[in-house]
Length: 287
Length: 335
Image 1 (tube, rainbow over the protein chains, first blue to last red):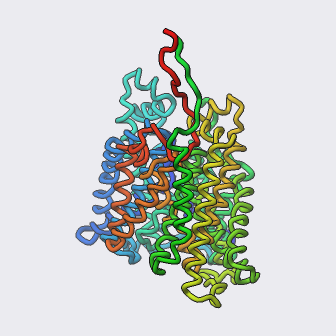
Image 2: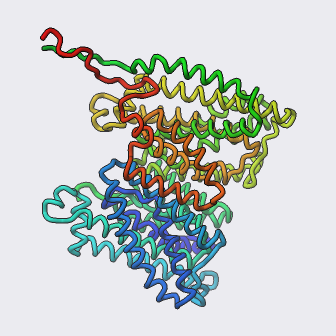
Image 3: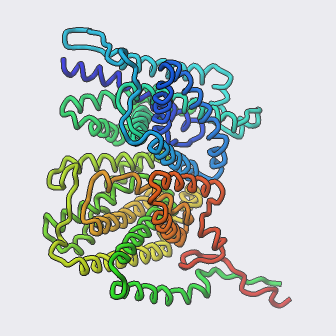
């Protein structure tokens, strides 16, 4: 029963990791940029909600912060990152790493290094009793559902919408996309906007579940990255599965000994890297 | 009208410079006789920064392997030094050399793991490896667990002797790393790396074994990072897992290399010296200092990607004769 519980809690945590990761996966998929500041943007959004929630209610704070994240993504892509794309693979990496350092230290300056959390009141402690020993928290369940819905939404958006088609076209062949009238720079801006919007959702839910500090961005990035690699590059559903596998690995490790949780997750990642480097659900060639 | 061309390496400048460099090294070796202890400590810090920048540049600028996890090998070097000198009771200077070797020995199998990833994912992969090594080190009681371990090997030595000895070790280390970097870049491996840097696919087509050359450079620089880690442990007399495995080392290395000029030998040296003075001036500003470094880094990558050295030399001359170039020896002969 303990193990069933560990697996279920891990599965629900996996939804959170998928939220933190799907923007990373999308930005890489479209522009081949690995956003090293992805986790920091998640934490930035969580701090934004904390700051706004002091003056207004939580829902409104979230509704206000998420579009700002998207706008920030669009502006940073068009203003800074697009220029770096032509300068080789190194430049965007260095720039996003610099974003990471800047965000962490600005947060440190504004909010200090004290732990904060996004207060969601009674919702945080609500739970459903399944059996005598098995309870499912409302917040973890909600996070998981949001993770699945976002993956589903992104899937349909990329497959069927006009902008989604343009995103895939730019990803497959920017030159050809340009020829058929797609403005790649605008499309890249949209990709980063969606990426940071998703990072923001992940960050806010992360901040509801655990306490966080400005230095937590890299932690979020590493979990997101492991989810992407475990799941397989270029596949949104793979990222969701990767997040779930990572979550279950961590919670089984933590069940053995509390301090082994994170380490167990890392070991799952290493095992995948050795045994199945293409990930569990790699994007099929030619698709 | 025939124009004659010659392929040369270096110029007249490069015939004079080795003499100057030798004189400089001799002068630096004599410094502890004249310089107060706090200044010797500052020199050691600057030497360590130059070693770190040179190694990271060799990896990223020439090997094309952008890593943000090389603190793994700094940490392995630092902990190996403390373990070999204190627990095994070896001479600390012998332990320093061995610590560098241990770091290289770790790098070899780890390369098989991280080389499964490429580009940006390689960068984060190396970082995860550094985190994993840290999590393991924290579990080891002999190494002091999470709170770290002090280096006791120097406790019988007077402060003045100790600092001078560390100074000379650091000087020997920087001399060896720079000399090996120059020799490496003049060797076949250096040529292969330059080819890979310029165009990986084209280099592969020409018969350069990209993977093997990259693995070689990954292991070699890890020896250098281990050496730097050992020196850090020696000069701080203490190793703490959260400090020594901190990703801040990567941030600093990237900054030094980018500001100085990626893919040149001179650039990182200038970048390290510049960074040393910047941090000395700005460290009182706390977090603002890192924000300024970040903004400066973005500005340089976007506006002047060739860095400080690229801007000074304009690719016309170099301090170390490693590159071949074509020059016209005589104009319009026999016309």
